[in-house]
Image (cartoon, rainbow, N blue to C red; front, side, top):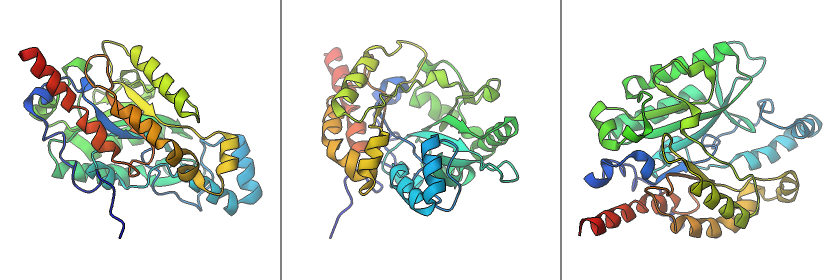
Length: 323
């Protein structure tokens, strides 16, 4: 019988609430937080039109081969295999979100997207909200960083939806350094939304994208990825922002061609995961260290577990200082 990997299940559902007082009083930008990349791709609609985020060559393919091409794209789009609730239970607290309208569809409905159209955004937000209502000390970062086929009305619709679903759980935009878990718990804030679009600039509960830089290596080679992550960490701003380390390999067109038969999981990720995970295990949170780390396929390793445990290093550091 196959058992589920460590870190999945309810093990980490309350990890933030269980942190010692030394850490809950520390700026959140200094803690290690696990995140998932293209977080809402666990369900993809094969019958929907090809998403607006696809390059022209893929659209051409899709017209040529229709269902076959879509099945191929499903393989490459499925970067997460867990539902929101499963990811939250596993300890994931940062979500990388790309959203789109369905061109030609009446109304302002918005969908999560990565390649093909996935869930309605509202359904995903409701699932997150219901988790947060059950786990009052857990806090999530929702990073809305790519918008496709959306006009002013769509943005108004999405921003209103975020406010309707999360209400008083939404944290007001303020100095990043003031955000500690204690600060959030005291105010009953559980959601920090980053909205990378000018439509949100005068709305107090929408944080600007420049407060959460997420440099992207865009490479298929693990060694290049690690070099890039180390350089960008060194260059991390001392003040004013959180930081996302994207421990992610990106499929190229020729990689897609080679990997068609096996899909992203076998071809790109499983072979290189040990290298990437060994690097993650050697990281330190705190000043000048890592903050949010995202990975593909959060259920393949005990990724969330490893990242959360990095916070123990902050305790031993503090103990040394106090001696």
